[in-house]
Length: 269
Image 1 (tube, rainbow, N blue to C red):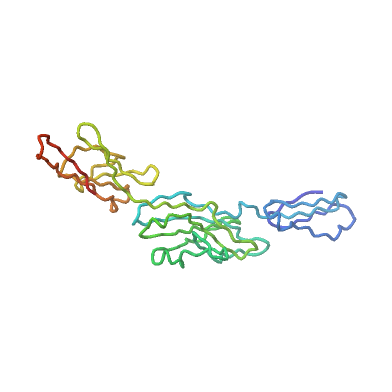
Image 2 (image 1 turned 120 degrees about the horizontal axis):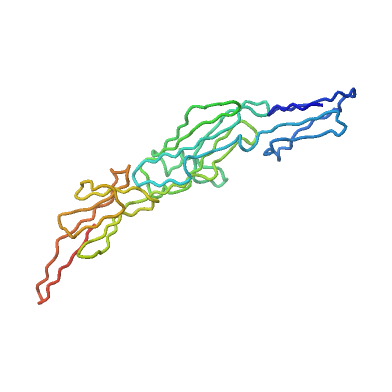
């Protein structure tokens, strides 16, 4: 007796026995669809039936990043690529729907961002061409959100639906978006200087500093002496058009109503 394997097809191998194989049909229960192989051995070696099924690797959703941080007012792109079998159970796979969502309705159905009132006029969804190699196909979809608000901070989920039984799949995990504001934090330093930090919720971004709107270069923080002619601001690299509010140094106020002269320094936003 010999064994032939054809992925995704049912195969029967009949021995050289003159007996007729029994009338049997073997298939895997749907509950075991994650198994790669379902096998039934007929101990009298009259025949062998098995069915090769699609495994989890045939249905995947992969996103470019699980965490994204962006600046309020900017535009962000979130991309995911989904993969599916070109054909399964003798049925050619057709993609019926793709959607992005952050929440579900009362019936636990995802609310498409394109119809979500919180994103009206600010979102676009686009998908590239379908590419098939061998028996597997893939396609990349991108969500663009404009004029980001801090309320847009959420986990964004991508789902695609096909004509196959159980052919609805969601990215797990989704993409966590954090929308942040920038601010300059000022603290005293030695010798009448100030320590200025550019602060945001993003992890390890590259900051660019400006003094009187002139680019000072890249740094997490700077030190500056009190100078009434200077204003300071920072921005995340790539979002230079969205700098933090400027911090201004005001001139000292001299109080001479008492023998002691007080110099008061104040920083205004």
